[in-house]
Image (tube, rainbow, N blue to C red; front, side):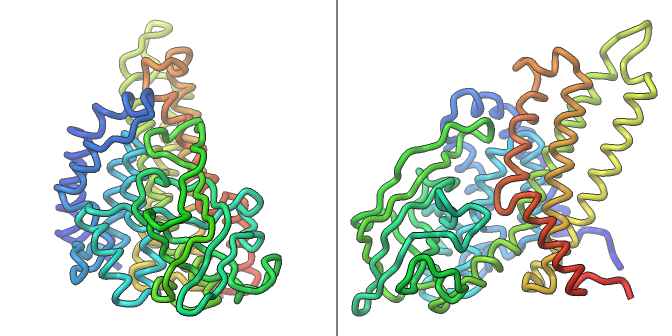
Length: 389
């Protein structure tokens, strides 16, 4: 058992850490205040080859896999979860295509993500279908060698910037049917007739990458744009399962960034003839968070290692969900305690703690809430997918 990162991953970590400190950190507050998409950071990531980390070399990526992307996102999220989300969006919409898509789909849509010439978004949720995925009402009807899509998708990260979308729709005659064979994935280009970006959301945090609606009205796509097979609901789940460590990395990075910021503050803040850092209660909080961050990192790195081995089918779900659940809950806890360590100052925009606090909560909701993850873990234990003898 080797816990040491390879030389290549260590070099990647060092490179991204420098980029995060020099390019991301100075921009984090401005991005949050303006809400404007940080195109400059996108170009920094593109020029550094970070947009193709999880994309195979034969498609123009670096082949660093989910582990490489996890490590990069952890470093970036120490300063900006918006910037980390930009990196995450190189894998979320492309994942289903890489898992089950044709070679042509991969060459036409995944390869341009690696060189930054195209951006993409993932469209699964709907107004009445968040955690209840099978409640979706977007419908796809076959018409010769084409499919016609109608419906509304919501809470789509990167919806404004995307050039194409991975869209899940019901392909059964009855849109209310809840059979898993009723759901199919499609690649839908932004410039097709009937594709429209609807309203964008007013978010509490993670501002700068727009989240909003995608409206589909009689959108025609060729049969070649089907990802995998008709009735591929499991593709949605496998795509999300393989994303668990990547979302978890956003949580680890945020927790690390919040704790490092708070520690530097309490070491300098005088109170009661000593510093806040001299107080045992504060020291215990620091120690507790440090231990939980490291525990989250071990769960997350293992999950990334598993996902890169293709271990993201049902029997591996408990291990992947543990990483996402624990790391994102640690992020919420760390952001809360670190803000408290700064007291009144931590609540003010003069300090990063209030930004960490607002950004953290998103992580326990997106790509499967904490409650969904707990349900998946429990089902895995009950089914003995996770068992100890």
